[in-house]
Amino acid sequence: MQDRYPDHIIDLIVYLVRRMHIGMNLRDIKIEKFRNYNHSEISAAYSWLIHNYETSDRQKLKRAKDHRPAPRALHPSERSHIAPDAYGYMLELYYLGIIDAAGMERLIEYAMFRLDGRTELSDIKQWAGGLLFESEGEGFHNHHLLKGTENIN
Image (cartoon, rainbow, N blue to C red; front, side, top):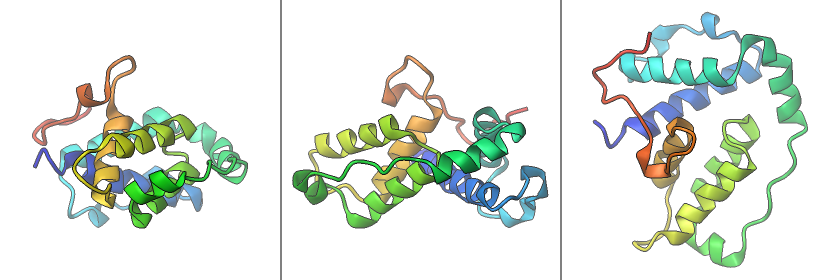
């Protein structure tokens, strides 16, 4: 389960942020919709959202989405290393405000340094999960995630 954990949480965060963008409150989202997620994954996603999106920042969230500058275009060599659906997902994360321009650059860098083939959507999800949950000042591979048996209070 540890291998699917970061990308599983990022899917849940994307779902929740999409709902916030259409005006829903976190407390209005029914937890029953999350049958494929365990309690630790749900707790981690909600904790990340609460930490990064205060309820008073809802208007700020909408303005940030509406006024976010377009990211730079990929260089042809970057395009050859990153699958189109993986890049599309990176753009979605960027435009939803889940990652910033620096985070997007880090994902592109990870893809470019990958030696074992083309970067696929599953790679981007895993790396993005690592970006979201890494501690400040620590490297990408030193992030802290729950193992699936813990709860966040």
